[in-house]
Amino acid sequence: MTPFSVSTMGLAALAGIALATPAFSAVNIGYAPVGDAGNAADPATGGFFGAVSYDYNIAKDETTIGHYTEFLNSVAKSDPHGLYSTNMASRAYIAGIVRSGSDGNYSYSAVPGSENKPISYVSWFDAARFCNWLHNGQGNGSTETGAYTLNGATSGIFTRNLAATVWIPTENEWYKAAYYDPSKGGTGGYWAQATRSDTLDGNTVGTAGSANYFDGDYVGSGTAVTPTTIALTDVGAYGLNSQSAYGTNDQGGNLFELNDAVIGGSRGGRGGSWVNSGESQQGSSYTIEIDPTFQGASIGFRVASSVPEPGSFALALLFGTSLVTRRKRSS
Image 1 (spheres, helix red, strand yellow):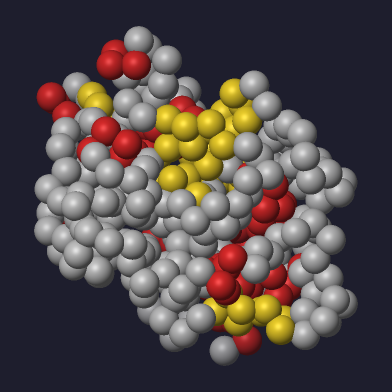
Image 2 (cartoon, rainbow, N blue to C red):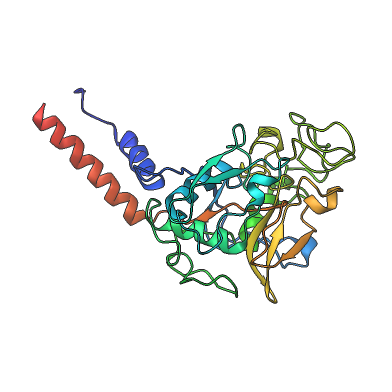
């Protein structure tokens, strides 16, 4: 084997990496693939939630403060759409993002130690613009078209474009990733919690089957009082033994997460949060309505994405093969 030769399997891996992660992306989302297309809906919901007829990817983690800081520095030197909330800096128990400078020259920095905590005080419109930015390649990519055609709108109900490559998960996509387990009972089934369990074992980090929610004390405070320094945990802090069957983190607790459900003039939210008590609010039976303009201390989001088409994969593989052949000839 020459120094420049690569196995077919290696080329496939390289091609997959190239498709999944743009070369110069500031924000790299780690995705969990969700297969088992055509699964049945959860009988516990009367057959309403959980069925998805296609494969897709969903972010393993909630969108973080670090991700959102990169987004703001790219698109919000002026901020006509209100992507930044001053609560991101003023609420110490959330930590978050500090803005400096003046309109037209704003810059943003994450509070030290908060980069891997999930971003809160974001609305459905903020999340949709973040998806547009990812869809359009980040950097100077548009926030107004792509996954959602917003064109300056800051209110109303908008639906995902068919050609979207990154989007706010549908309620079924979110629900399946959190609660469905293709191996449960040998034929597939649903858990009540997003930890491959029907119950939660408290909010202690490192304890299997746990999540960040209020169970008599807030995570990090040790007492049943409003926390002054710590409310959110780093995404994925609870570890492998608290993940969903598809490998997602924190779909129960930390923050309620927006989904793309339309409920009257509102959008859907699921998963409970650090401030909500009781297992039921973290579990599959609980959903909330969220005004699409609302920015709150308990609201965040994760994104979903499409699975690359086989033709695109083959094209990347062909490119990789061509590149290696040229290198071999020049060696």
